[in-house]
Length: 634
Image 1 (spheres, rainbow, N blue to C red):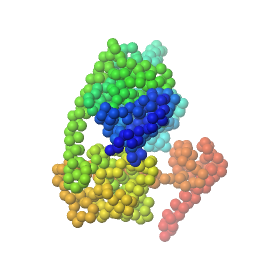
Image 2: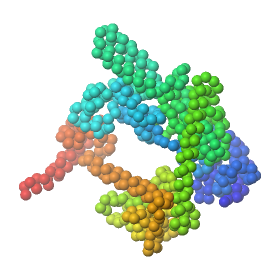
Image 3: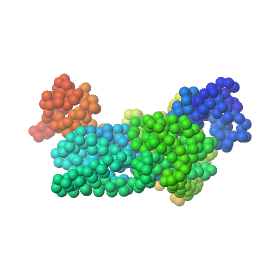
């Protein structure tokens, strides 16, 4: 514990303007980030009478060893910088979010030549527009099925699309009119792009123009006695209405609004969010917020709004763009700054308020009830999980004779195929739960490394990174226990590597798969944990997660190498131009059979490069044919 007075800034050195401040521990890691209208007033409040501070603040200031700050122009900039730093540093004394499940989104890959629609769980790809989140995957899949009949946007995977293009025949969806079949040229790129834009507008809540347009077109077709066309338009109209029925009307005035409700207890907050567009409920989600900071409920409202509307850099999530109205269950502490930040995000005015009457008030009450239920469900689940995790950590401390419970456990696993493409994974569990942000994968650099050499290399690379603040932050904390997937030889190799890099005080054990024996270093006999113990179950979970991660990385490396083609080794032909050639000709074989003049039709391929490609592919074909010819003659 540190005495806060030992690092208190000198009187008068703290600016009085708005800004963002950071508390750091003795290793330079950022443990808390905050913003203030007046930096001097806010930072000095942490160094007031220690007994008057909230227990959470007391823990933070005694864990810190220094404080620094950055002055900004206004409170809106302070809000934006604060959240940027929280995302960057993940400080342990700032608010923590716990989603109790992952929600499905409807994704449209607008960055592709012929965009695809699909249901996904996480919005993470650039060049893709995401709609949602939705409560149930089955509901959005049924909606996508109906919308495919109307807009004809493809839902097939890229492999199916390319194969259909090469064969000149559409897949089943093209034959049953659930796809406009751009793969075989039934629709040109501009016409297809127009359909994609219309589908995006519909999903964003702009539904009325499409309904009126189809009704008018159906009436016109009937008046012209084109009854087959009228029947087709009638079916499309029915599909649109069925898709709309899945999004209940909750506001009769057609408002675009987000409803954000919070329900809290002494330790956590349940949050429920409803996304309403044109009066219809188009998305919803709930999550839990841990009360890690000494701030009011209004301060937590700010934190929730920051998270909802920050989005991911380069990823277009429809619900991350603020609507005209943001309805909240409690006023944010700094409503003006939050409002200014949301207006910048939206590019227009945003009204943040607590609804007082009518449909909006009733919808808020429903959201608050849902937030209360989310918190109750989390309490019940957490109480059982927390008991089991606490028991597992206590058992590990007892069985392995550790000085303290291993709150952070790291596990290393090696994956190889007959000594080639050797890789390793390092997974991290904190408080018995996986911390995926700290997972690492390693490509083994030691030539012809066996299992023991690979373990030594990974341990050295993991624990030698202690020289800079950035490296310390990358591998946040030293583990309370290092687990190696293997037996006594692997543990001995890891222990030797720890000693060599000056980290020999870190406890290390191995978990052998055959009998699930736990091998401590320098021991002739393993420790046999009871089969029903929570400690063994936790070690198995950690080991299995490391094994899964290593296998996944190894397969990715192998498939990446196997996907190499004859185009990869041609001088002057980069990835973009190679893809353009494949898109134009459909296969390497077709490119090989093309003349230099035909190659130059592709944008970016000039006469010199076309000649190089033609010569390289012809040479590769000759070399690959030679052994076959010799074998035939023999």
